[in-house]
Length: 470
Image (tube, rainbow, N blue to C red; front, side, top):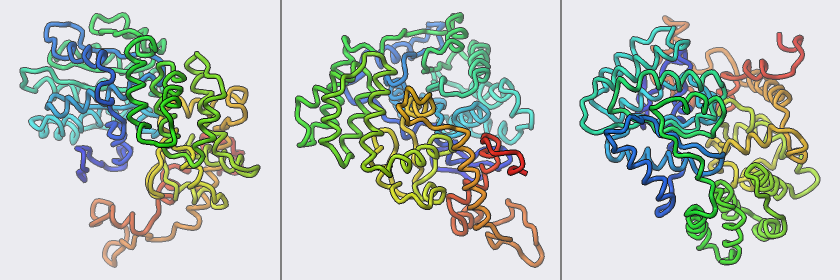
């Protein structure tokens, strides 16, 4: 195994883990709370965290999407890590297949525990080495052997913490229920372990948690413009945009008012305004379009404004939808370069990514592009009436990517592409090849790697006729 920088380990591909994707589970790119904001809820979590007498080992922070739950989770995870009290983290996200399911949850948590609690390194390493094939199919066995048993042996006088963020982003309802039920069953055996859990209040999650005496439910009050949340958002907006000369104090106040207590709305607008090429048009649109009060409708209106301002001429609409189709359904984040390989005739990719910086991460051409919040992906995958024509048809998108993957592989693949064959070793095993990772980077591209890993998955999810699949 090859150690990676943050305590995560890239393991054999037969385990189904790609280190760079599993690292997404640690939420390292999730923003933390601005200083002076979210003080009430953060203090509530801190009081619960140090209360050794409470039987409530799970703090459930739940509210609507976009109310700042992940930011709060990231803030506490960083704080506890600096204090050496963090056990592990897992931030569920639809950005990658590995973070929207639980197959690799226990391994990711175990690797993080090994990094954060050094005294458990050998014990967890032994547990990982002893993993048997049934681990993949039995979450209870994984959790027991990789997480529970090592933490039971930890000698500590202070509580330690697991952070599980955005459980609602786990795509499989049954997996969500099994995860919760398994934790509730095992937690009483580790009194020094506490879990900070965030999610939207989905019915299946509520059904499990509300019946347990182990759960402290803060209640749905993160979205409340009449409380400190309004002043928190004002502080955030003024810090983000106060140094932008073209945005007046009245315009900043307008953004605060329109957000209605929704942090996601405010952060999306701030990112868009800081990087938009058409600042005046965005501000004008925000000032003339009435903001709905409903959370979903409010974000829909904002997402429409983000998308519309990216279309500069009659030909841009379809080019934009081609890009969104890829970003929405790929099984892991892909870079501008990889998208360019999928869409060789689209010369507007860089401009679109820049214009959509309010909803997408924008970076170097070889850096993965991520959807910043799952509600944007949900919006694109909803019905055309809701999206006003910006809907992505997932089966059609999968079909297009499947064909693009096959075309890429047809051009790129050749015998012994990495030049590893020797006269005495014509078919070397991966583990015998020195510097394999560097050879892969040298002799392949991101598009080739993605196509090799996922072409069949896209075929399976597509509407391609059977005769074209075999």
